[in-house]
Amino acid sequence: MPISEVTAAGQGGVPYARALDAFLAAHVTSDGMDGIVQAYRAVQAMPYFSGPDRSPLAALQSGRGACTAKHLVLRDALRRMGQGAVVEIVEGDFASAVPLHPGMPPQLLGMLADGGVTDFHCRVRLDSGQAMDATWPLALRRWGFEADAAWRGQGDTVQAIPQVTVRSRDEDVLGTKAKLLVTLSEEDSARRLKFLALLSGWLAGLPQAVGA
Image 1 (spheres, one colour):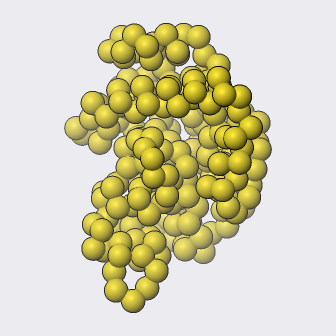
Image 2 (cartoon, helix red, strand yellow; image 1 turned 135 degrees about the vertical axis):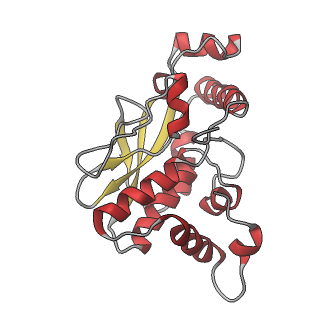
């Protein structure tokens, strides 16, 4: 899955564009809806990790990312395929996206039980109307995560956060999300950061690749 930094940097060309081309060449072999599904599956397969660098290039180089980077990769891959797509930023309780599991650390279990982790989550909306959420890899289904294994292009994929409010379809996803995050109270912001750190720390110890 990871695209090497050498491939991403390349020579003569925009590093991100070259990384996208390499990603598409490795994972998408069909046109039309079949190609859209292949692109979705390739991004979905990237392990979830919420780190300091949310850029799509970082996700392509490392082969992992959180909702922002993963859905920027998916949007831009689809556009490179000639498909119309935007990233939607939606507001919801991220704790509702994560199932309780006895192997989790007590602090994470407590936050999940309490809920109320306000976050601004990203997904992709096709011009044809389907909402695509590629947040959770299929391998996480064994731990109870709602990862969509059945989507073939009709209707929406399973959504990571069940109930959301759409806040933005702006092209500047990273900038807009940063502005939205500033609107959180100090308490909500600290709670969100703590939750993401605990979740990413736990997920880092799980095999997120299919067949692992």
